[in-house]
Structure formats: C-alpha cells, structure tokens
Amino acid sequence: MIATERIEAERHFHDVQARQRAGDLARHPRGLVFSDDEYLDHESWIRPALARLGSVAGRSVLDFGCGHGMAAVVLARRGARVTALDLSAGYLDEARRRAEANSVRIETVQADGNALPFPDATFDAIWGNAILHHLDLAQAGAELRRILRPNGVAVFCEPWGENRLLCFARRGLPYPGKNRTRDEEPLHRRDLERLGESFPKLEVTGFQFLSMLRRVMHVRMMTVLLEACDRRLLQLPGAKNWCRYVVLTMRRE
Image (tube, rainbow, N blue to C red; front, side, top):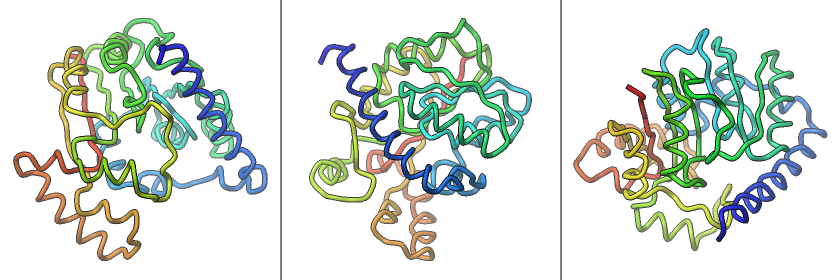
C-alpha cells in the first residue's frame, strides 16, 4: 500500500474508534477521570516501562501516539511538560478533555509519526505504547533520535511477533480488544535492526509469557503467580521470543 493511503487508512480507523469512545464518554463523562494506578497497572509492562523514563518533573516529554491521553495525564501529574501527539484528531480531542477533567495541562499536536513537526533536540524523553508497529521503523527511528536531546531517553511498549503460537491466535482466535488496522504487524527481530540504525544500544525486555493467559483468565492470585514465573522464565536465553510484548529503551548518547 502507498504510504499516503496507509496513513489515511490509519487515521480513519482511529477516528472511528475515537467517535465511538466519545459517544460512551458523553453518556458517562466521569469516565474521563482516573487514578494513576488504573493506567499503570492495566497491563504488567506499563509501570516498569514508565519507570525507565526516570524522573520527568520539569522535563519536556512527548507522548508519541497518545490515543486516549491517559499516559499524558500521568506524566503531567508527575510534573512533566507534556506534548501529546497523535494522527487522530478524535483521539486528540479526548486527550484534551481527559487532561481538563484531571486538572492538568498538556499540549496536543496532530501529525504522522514518520514525519514529526518538531525542531531538533526538542524533548528530554519520549513515551509510546503500541505505536511503533504502525510505522516505518527506519524512518520513525531517525525522527525519534532527531527530536531527542543528548542523553534523552525514549521508551516504547510494543506487541512482539516472534511467538508463532501467539501469531496464530492473533490471526485466528476471537478475544477482547482484538481490533487492529489492516496493515499493522507486531514487531520482529528485523524491526529491531531498523531501530538499531538510529539507536545502536537498544535495550529489549520481554513481558508476558505464561501470564498472557490473564486475557482469558481473571483470577488475580493465579495471574500474580504466572507473572512471578515469567520474571524468571523470560531471563532465559531465547525465551524473549515467546513473550507477548516487548519494552524498548532507546537513549541518545
């Protein structure tokens, strides 16, 4: 697919989602208000990944692909000067409303993640969740490096595509939250190589192997036990290929 067609397809997909969410929030406006823990603990990788940004107080932080704006709000509550970027105007509207409902200030920018409208060395830190796998990794990586300040850090949480059983499930089995755009694919080793062209010291940590069963099994004690097992199993050589998500830490040195 031509790049411009893919961008328009992505924009349309997420604007439709945002309109559906806007309808729900119009009926239940208190849904915009949330605690930090609600966001940090909704998936097992979010809290440890966000911690890799370090202290953000007084720093300029980009929420790259902000979606519903929850991460932007959490970062702003921690004292960051937050810019929330998304391709979808609908999601940016939700992010603005969520920031207002939670009494924080953020800036919003609508743009394609492959072509960022910021000067060089604009941000101290960049955060993203499930966004890079929608993009041209070589192009996006170069842009992320360009806008990071020296010693800046970028942290991304991304679906991993080297687990063949999980790929089969993603393609063929029904489960909650499965909606995806037509062209998106989980990250593979080759994608890490493209990012490595801009960030040679890319750090990769796997999350959820046994504990990915939490999507269909809602017994908290069992989930805690499986997550404890994962912390050991995913340290074994080659085990990362069986995980559900990876957290990528990239530093501009």
